[in-house]
Length: 365
View (cartoon, rainbow, N blue to C red):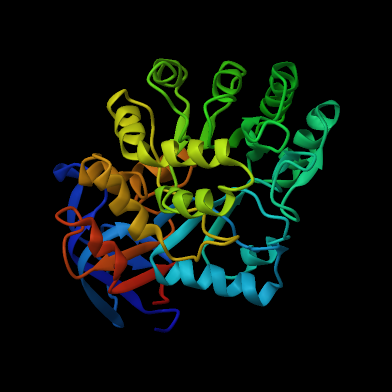
């Protein structure tokens, strides 16, 4: 496909979740979306099917491996795997690698970075995070707010070996000051949270999002809903809890039992959050130990939890892009889209097999 080729996408262009937002065709001209047929175009390539905005993985880690940062060639493979799965926008929820070089590549997904994880000393996976004490939290949040793309990532809870279970990592006064500093610098804050114990302090301190949110109980749901705090459940990651629990059974039996309880109620947790009006977005937690390219599986998990299929699609397309401040299939927007042979609204599992992936107006997959 040459630079002067006009791409014609016809069939059903799903520009929004409602039927009146569906179009019969769009045109890609100079890498951007147009709903007007170009005059005098000679070199036209036509793609037929159901088109969606490029999918969003709202919790992903490019440049992160099982033991920390990875080489650029590995990070490139991670990004390409996501791209070929239709994921064209990534909110990178913490990475120790500098992936700014990705921004210069027209063939790789766009990344919104949260800098590097910020964790309590010896309270997270080795090699992943800045490991600090509460007195330094404000300074490190300011540092990562300046390094990132409008997000900062805290580790809100983790196993406390003395307690033998998950406990909150930060005192309330520390998170209040840190979140206020991030907001002063124009950044939003999110936090890794498996358990219940850290959630109230984080939300009442003004946090913007909670990752995983398996500890979201019925008494906390109204607080999340009233504050508009989003969750990214990462259900494909939560599926690993039984295996993790089995591995820690002998040394940390209380933690293992807790992880099993969180896993057992995971679908109820997500459905109850959605029913209460809490914004829910799709993220896989790819990177570290999970493979990339799992966004279709995550959307299917959201449906299994009880979210209606079109709303689960919105969690990885229209709503997710709006939340992150990026365009969908608007007139003049960058032409980032995926085309499918079947209607993904009828069966979200269709997302697993994009027929065509278009990034910056060029067919890349």
